[in-house]
Image (cartoon, rainbow, N blue to C red):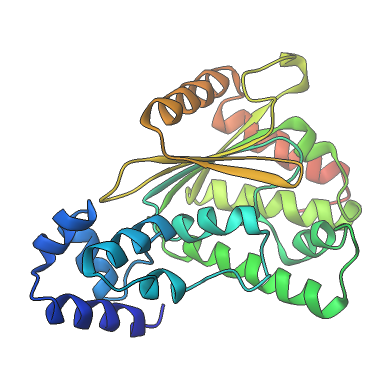
Length: 265
């Protein structure tokens, strides 16, 4: 991100005569998190920005001009999770119906976003596709964040956008898994009920703040920061993962399904 915000925060901190540690203590954050924000390596959450405003007596200046404030390219309920996703060191996804946004190809994303209701213009759809693909750039780093994807078999079987788009999408996931950039596991239909059937779930871990969870349903999403709730959701994920197909078998199923859609090596 642009370091304008980080420079601004540093100037406000120094004007208040505070060290990074003193500001971190006042805002209930870690010194390293303050350092990352000032250096332009991290984007603070909206809650962090509010605490910084309170600690520095800057009204709502830092929260109002937070980088990445929603510009309409993502749903309002997802915006906080989108910002945090870019800062995570580990991400574990569960998808019930669609391929997780981080793993979507351009054509798959275009098909998903094209199904929005009420309908959007081509211009808005193009902008939303670009935003979704920008999210996936965190996978350009060969190591961080660590990403696990747990996919219900329905994600593979639902022909979003048609056979060609599905074949390309599934092989994209296979390649990410085969190069060990991600781990992918499939929850087979034969399993029946499992602990994550309620909807989509994302678990995130960070270098310098507690883990968080984000769950989503129809036109709604919730960011969970309560330690007890996050632990409960982590446990449900672990339980579901223990019943999923192993990595090798999951890759084979993805490849076989892509072949059914018409993909050929």
